[in-house]
Amino acid sequence: MRLTNTSTQRTYRYLRLSLVGAAFALAVAVVQVLVTVGPVVSISATFYTPARDVFVGVLFAISLALIALSGHSWEQVLLDLAALFAPMMAVVPTTVTAGSVPGLDPGCPAPCVPADAIDGIRLGMTTLVIVAVAGLATAVVLGVVQRTLGRGEALALTAAAIIVAGAAWWAVADPHGFVLHGHDVAAACFFALLAAAAVVSAIAAHGRWRVAYAAIATLMVLDLLWLMLVRDLLPGESIALALFAVFWLVQTVERWNEIDPAGILPTTSR
Image (cartoon, rainbow, N blue to C red; front, side, top):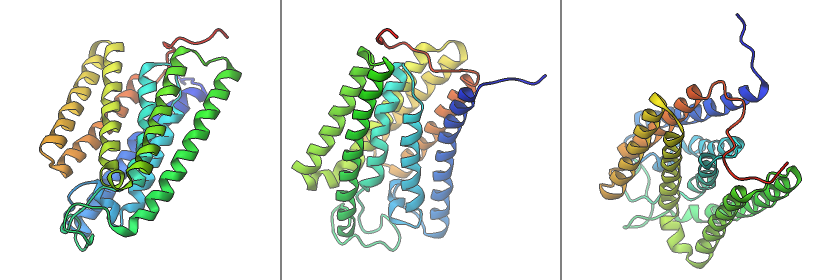
């Protein structure tokens, strides 16, 4: 028997699977770094290794895929907001010290971002803010034209605008603090939003799927607490990456035959 499906179904399947693939690609790059370069303090520190292109490319790919998974649910709102933080994690590298990466001398005794990365951060953040503003404006126009701009979408766009404005203000008002802490804040927000999305999925799901999402959300929260309190970065980030992949694998299997995300946000009449 030949199963039929729509191009929309296949698109959502491939997008979810691409997120699993992105996590796998980053994991492969990290393993190669550990074998060929040596032990690094964290996955984020691979920015300073030959895996930099993969690290940055994966984060931008994740952001694009999260945004492309359009829908009208609180889960999707959380994922869209998480998509704003992924490129920031790529553009603003983590701080390092001597010994964080074999062969790297950051040129400072305390944790810092090497001076030669500062210009890239400025250019990258300027680009991200301009593109984000243009994207938000486009989303508003499309919402009006398509008559889908209801209270839920307006709330989501407002939250996104606040995030973009906040990041831009921080980068301008306190550039030193932004460079030192921007990556960690973006990473914490990204995985916190993903954990929240898993909680929403657990509430909406039934049976084994509810158990799966609840377990993922619980492990994500515990892992975030571990990272903040213990600061054992490489194991903690590795667990976070694995949970990210598991979340999307579960989503792919559960929603294999889903034609379009459920619309549970209030929208305007069409």
